[in-house]
Length: 323
Image 1 (cartoon, rainbow, N blue to C red):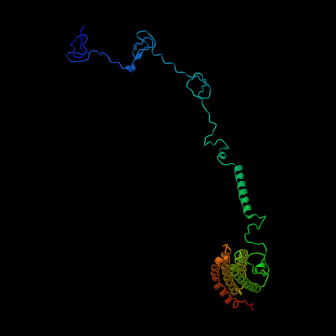
Image 2: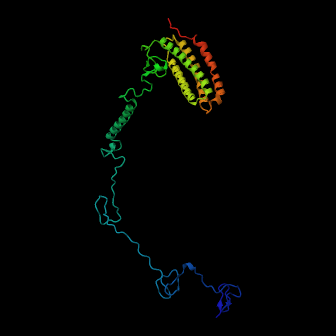
Image 3: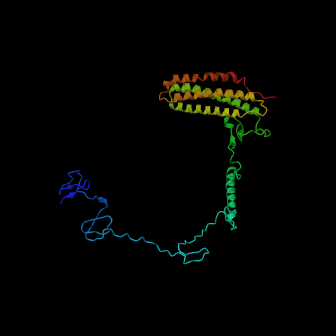
């Protein structure tokens, strides 16, 4: 049976895939999107998207949507006067807040609730006083007034250092001596004693130099070690004597020039001691002291200028009692 072309209306022979006149395709009569089709799980037939059951076998393809569950809450209904009304629907339960509003003047404690209580003020004050008071006691420690004193205050015997008597406390930069406090010994006697002590130490230095020249030539290691220790002891005595001289003087400065002369003599003698100690060290270190004898003698020569200055000025700078 011939078909009619849907585009031009001409007759199309059976079996023709297109119209011989306008070449329109005649096989496709309707286009349905595959995504909208559903296959029947029972017979496999195509089910249109609008049908819920298979048109061929009647199998249910698209089940009806389940009803939405609804919670049945038994809430009381409250009318405008606060009484339940079973005839009204859609009334929500009124929820009263336990927190009072910010501008609630009906409560007598409203003003106090926004401020710290007196108990908190009292506790903070007591805590602050305890902290400050404890810190003050820790710093001042009134139970031991001398705990913060850093200067030396222990009595010391200075008779072995050429300074007669004893010193109860340091003076100078540590503390100023009270002018009304009596001096334990006459100022001139102390200056004269320091002057004589300088002469004794100068003699000890000269003897040590002579002994070094003899011992270095003999090569006696034990004698060299003993001589080095003696030279260090003399050097220490000179340094201690200079420290004692620095503390000498009087209130009106009568013997200030004498003290300066003694300090100059002491410094020359200390420089000479440094040279002497270095020479003893050079002689005591090697196994063969005779190998460094020339170096030792050369080192001792460096102290001749200090010895000469000391000898030239010692007699001229002898202290004299004032008045």
